[in-house]
Length: 417
Image (cartoon, rainbow, N blue to C red; front, side, top):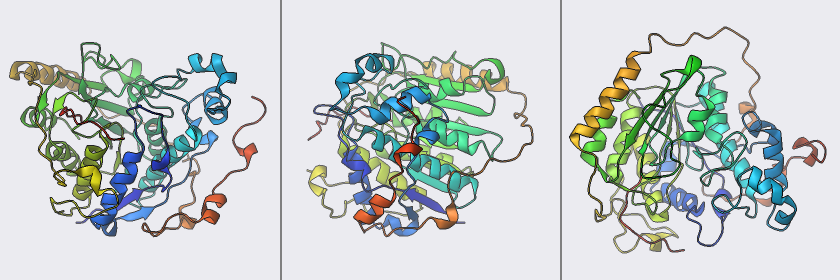
């Protein structure tokens, strides 16, 4: 039976810029959406221009002071917030750029609406490639991430579901999400990531297992550099597969030798469990390969075979010289993940899983009101840009936010998941 897939995309989300030389490029979202349109994949999905999150939505996880800072700081007035920059870890990796708060509002709102639609059985799979910023903490930015849309989306899912599985296959450890749910048994966080040699963020050891009620509900699969397709499939397919986060291959900051196909196999594997899934983007810093990967995974989620030859689009020159969905990228790193090491990791993680005796019990209570009114949400034509009147209509009154004063990417052959 075909799955109902909801796809969220704000036409403005790809127009933000972290600054010259910064590896995080929201423009990758525009490339991905262009391929989704020109492959015709939008015809197999319900396409939505997503809700934009308010300060109240973001403060469901983050502190009021931190979100208030994000809302007020701009490149023009940043000198007035010198003390706040260090307190909230905003600076080099997480710079202040034009439209920062709007960017956070867009990607967070899309994840929040994804959760609401899953809760209301409006779809089986929700896709928000702009989301997945898993490093952000309650009181601070981290790793190019400002607002943790994943945590906010999971909190919404927990209104209807007794438990949620968060599965992270980004090359970096999902530290912000793990930290948020480290003490609860209602959210199991599972992260496959590179670990060791001072690799960011430096967390994710297999012995980080959770605490108190959440003991054994944090699972970490620390991997070494050079992970290839065969090794990754070997260890991934032994994991139970629900909220998933991906980061693409062929990446500037990655250290794996995975192909786009192997990364897509992970998404396909989880899809096979026939549970509601929220699929989010996350990392990925070589724009053309991010777009390839997310487009391919979109095709898998809608069960549509697509041509290896990329369709014509306004961004076609980004994919030179091969113009292929699955380019041949030279492997430049030897796989340091020996069979013995992977077996050791698998045994250790499975031993932790055995300690979970039963599913968590959840006290019955009234379900809070949904943040969105789904009955009045219109589905836009994905090929039509925002009209200015539509943009103006989405702007909230200032007093609804707070009260008081209170590039051409280089190809290095490294592969990221």
